[in-house]
Image 1 (cartoon, rainbow, N blue to C red):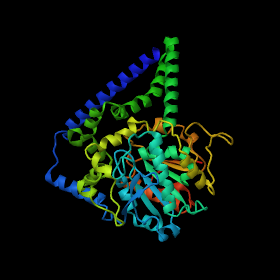
Image 2 (cartoon, rainbow, N blue to C red):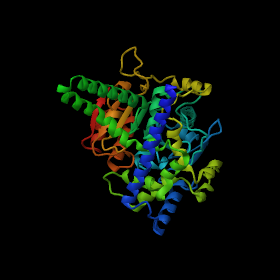
Image 3 (tube, rainbow, N blue to C red):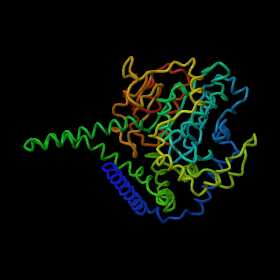
Image 4 (spheres, rainbow, N blue to C red):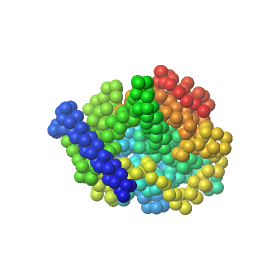
Length: 476
């Protein structure tokens, strides 16, 4: 009975705070004048052109061509690449494979400023994917951890074969690097912890390790409660423990405010759909405008950002790649509800639920682990580290001006979760959307080059010229 009452109270609290957040976002949109503002004819034309530029399968984008990959399970992924997969030239080249995984509410196109870099295109095979339910990739019935991570793992294993990383009985013939942001970072942290053989290095920007976040929340709540208890027992000397309790609780309160949208994502479907599409898509537009942080942006930038979120229109859905492949059939079915597929990652516990690996996944991971020495966490010689500890080398990028995640909740203690050869890199002038901002984008390019060339120099030295003042706060 007590548990039932607790669940009801928690559900009521989540609903109340989520609904409050929806109202708050509406008030912000009203204050900014975006809620009732209709797009002009010029803005409509710019968006249409941007969607054609990013999503027409028959046209290249800045040296990158579109591809539709049908996995053995029958699931279809969309991605762009500078090299044609599964051709003798690509398979036999010595270029490392770099796979980019985006976050919410984006697609492969969030990486457009990075992957169009001529030096990168010359040095590595670039693959920027759309996650299931995003952009041009097929939808899932449910976006739980098993469904999402199984499809993502199958894709990466297939890409490794089609780009010549693995072939026959030989594996890891060249390096594989995974670069991820936001939700892509959350999922990639799980891959680095639970399927570390997929890549030689993970470059992860502004996304949390859920296990670390849970640990920090418990630690800060315990500290706050203990200090309040001390103040209660000694009221004459309560000032110091009350101040300590306030310091412990402050990051929790700040993250609670920043995470209001997560609570809103748990509301009934019509409310969530309204949150993400109501007010002329004001919430998504505000997200994209804030993604540039202190950078200047043009109307073309805004159109490209919205086109990245919206995916192919009806016109682009009818196009085909040079090899005759088309977008998945269910793409047109989600045309007016694609935002609900994005929201489903939050609603279906893709970040927190357990991942039940299939026999095929276990066999694939075992086959590619040969010839690759896995790193252990830094917890100790015979210690696997805390739950969720990464077992592959990782470089964590963190924009200190992040408007969605509190650094104290997401980074404190991160060193205990990292494997040998890992780093934490703070970007003091950068916000949440590291792939979009020019300075942090340049730092990411340098880091990818550093990883692709064998990591022979110091990571701080590799980045410093493109991002003066960069801070490497942890290195193992």
